[in-house]
Amino acid sequence: MKPQDDKLDAYWMPFTANRAFKAAPRMFVAAKDMHYVTDDGRKVLDGTSGLWCVNAGHSRPRIVEAVKKQVETMDYSPAFQMGHPSAFRLAERLAHMAPGDIDHVFYCNSGSEAVDTALKIALAYHRARGEGHRNVMVGRERGYHGAGFGGISVGGIPANRKAFGSLLPRVDHLPHTHNPKENAFSRGQPAWGAHLADELETRIIALHDASNIAAVIVEPMAGSTGVLIPPQGYLERLRQICDKHGLLLIFDEVITGFGRLGPCFAADAVGVVPDMITIAKGITNGTVPMGAVLVRRGIHDAVVNSAPPGMVELFHGYTYSGHPLATAAAEAALDTFEEEELFKRAQELAPYFEQAVHTLSEMPNVIDIRNMGLVAGIELESKPGKPAERAYNAFLKCFEKGLLVRTTGDIIALAPPLIISKAQIDELVGMLGDALKEAGRD
Ligand code: PXG
Image (cartoon, rainbow, N blue to C red; front, side, top):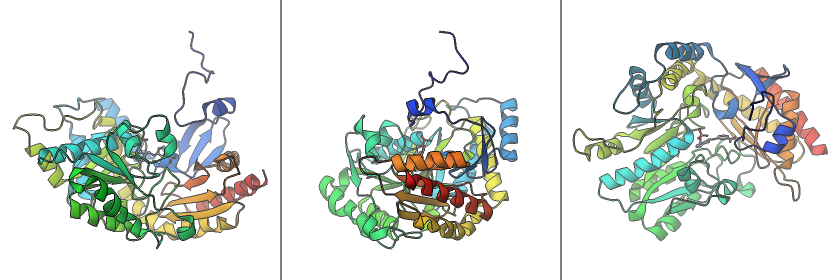
């Protein structure tokens, strides 16, 4: 078949309504700082940092230069039994930034791979200690941990699991923490809900016995499902229960990492040190695909020291683990975050952002608004028998007005780049408010 440049048919788009998109495509052709440019030359304010990844804004000079320079110097270096300096430099730096005694870094290429890697490290760790019977994985309802078979098994978004089931044989799920009667319109961490962590002990450990459970994985702030903010004391309680029973606690910080909630990691924001942290997205500012697992020293040491000297210790990794373009982009992204003090900026802007988004509570059909750091979720009442239609319409109207938002079900998520100005926050909320008014009339 002869390729045709203007045909949209061949590309099967991910997590997309393919037929609707191809009937009315929306194309971006350029991006700079806070804006995208469409193929018809319109500027669109980025209200979602691309897909929660472009934390420092688009096409930032340091990162662009670093990637250009790297591709000219060395395009690729084998990931197994060979190294290159930038991968080690970056790992040292990430180890230094990570909380507590988390001081080892395992590279991969996406959040999904980071999750599967962390689950495998958990199994390898318990096996290395002679507790290979610990193989139950605990996730949470409404959790999103990527699209791999491990991730969808511990994940809890029904549509993502429906067609595929759970291929990890032994999983269980905590309840999610959202209850519109108890914590709607919370500003920051809701006061209600810490007790839901107790289900780990009273239901899940009681059922499986702690001696069979490997790890608990949660997003400290659940993003994809539509922004669920951790109740005060909830993550602390999970940590206590995991400690008491020898379970590893994994924070999936693919979205929350690199300043989204203010501090570098959500772990820092709540003062809880997990055993592993999965990261991706913001690590390279979205410029080059990359993921990683940050691992506590004791876990690394147990696995590595259990193998005979000179032998491979962990039979896991990817062709592109620590790809030179990714490590170059990540080093430059961390430089940019630091030089511009973007995490501090996010923290300082958060109250203004909170105030601005909560003004939308007056808009039609808004049944909840929740926020933390530079993230907000605005939940709309679903149209009877037509779930997700209202938010999707609002998304389309925002796009027409020049604003990119993200929707999931009838929830609109906002997560702008950390370089956003107060005036741009006002502009964002203004456009979204107008879109909600119009969507309310449909
Ligand atoms: N864990 C978490 C917590 C995520 O949010 C992944 C893992 C998977 O990452 P990769 O890089 O494999 O996609 C994610 C991804 C959305 C949205 O609109 C969220 C994600 C991806 C795309 C869209 O909420 N999160």
